[in-house]
Length: 130
Image (cartoon, rainbow, N blue to C red; front, side, top):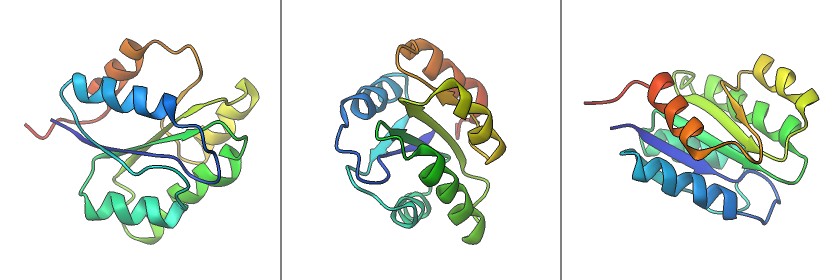
């Protein structure tokens, strides 16, 4: 089992995709915590540490991914929790994916990514607790 936090940073009010991902990850045998809408990077990191998660999945449809996703990674480093893997998804232009990866985002999934691809990546990338 893996513990995964799904979060919606910023002012983006659309969470259907995040809920679909949370359910798919849960159905694949993971424990999933969903923080809800309008979370700051600091709130996301605090929740991740409090919940002792293995990974954080970020969702952004607002176009603020280049500003917010790296702030989550930086806050993890600041809180000495950089062992928590961060992945992201949402409406993210292909041109931004490399920049997000350089900022420490382990994987980026865009609209139309098959749920099986995402759950398989999680299985391969995040060690199970047992």
